[in-house]
Image (cartoon, rainbow, N blue to C red; front, top):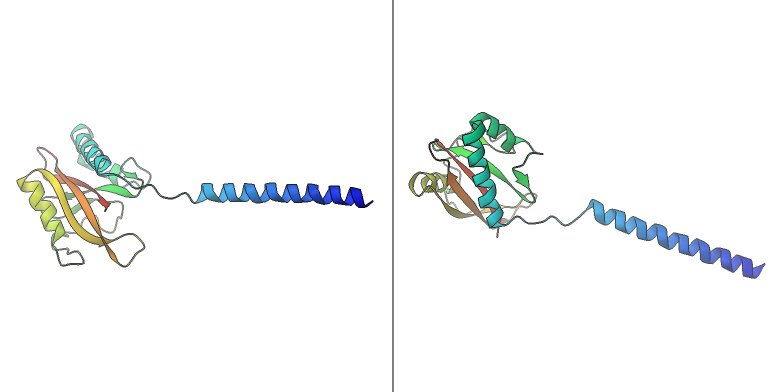
Length: 163
């Protein structure tokens, strides 16, 4: 009887190891490390949104930018849009849309939205560096955002990454 009991315990242990391994694999699939977007991806997504504005219009493109499951939210970032007066026209956070944020300052007092608009109006495109807390954090981190004025329109499109 002892031999049968030992064999049974080995089988139970093996089954338990398999169950634990499956749980670990399943949990890893649920909580993958979030990939970081790149600066090149920001440029590509911003220009894709600008081209879409030209193809289907402002309102239809803004709806796609605002859509949390849309093409302009990826990895750890998203596209957003201001008009050249500093009014947020499209953003994944609907509470920001329609607000004039030209005077918004980063944690160091830099008026970064005003700089966004200046770059859009004067150079047409470029990068703006500022500090802002990452989602869920209180401490500010360096962030860089690509600015691109849509040709022939009174809007600019943006996307940024934390450095």
